[in-house]
Image 1 (cartoon, rainbow, N blue to C red):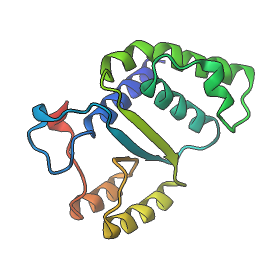
Image 2 (spheres, rainbow, N blue to C red):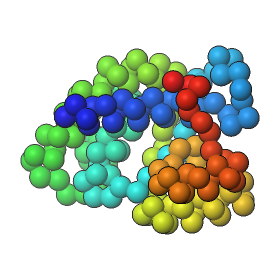
Image 3 (cartoon, rainbow, N blue to C red):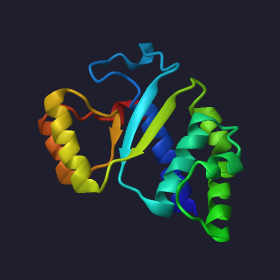
Length: 156
């Protein structure tokens, strides 16, 4: 559970960190109020419900578990519902702390890593990219060569 919690905190920090515009270098001057972050992920099934739970509570720390579960397509057993409930309940205070700005994350399943990579390459050409995306190291290296990778180190 500790590793999962660390993952969640890292995810929330990463979501907050991608808010500034790519060309922005004076991060202290950025007002993230009301920003929307598009996040492409590869998770499906129960894992998609878990990531969507993290996103839902980040967007609205007061999200009602039952209302959230009603929006999900995956069939969940009793243990999975309990785990999703635990995710939401455990992240409420973290979300309040890291998202007092009303940032909204729009998470969307975009296929597997290969599918996402292909969509990203097309997006680079078209100039239409998500703010946050999952990637393997070699894919991230390609994004770096294309000039669309933002280093988060200065933001944490």
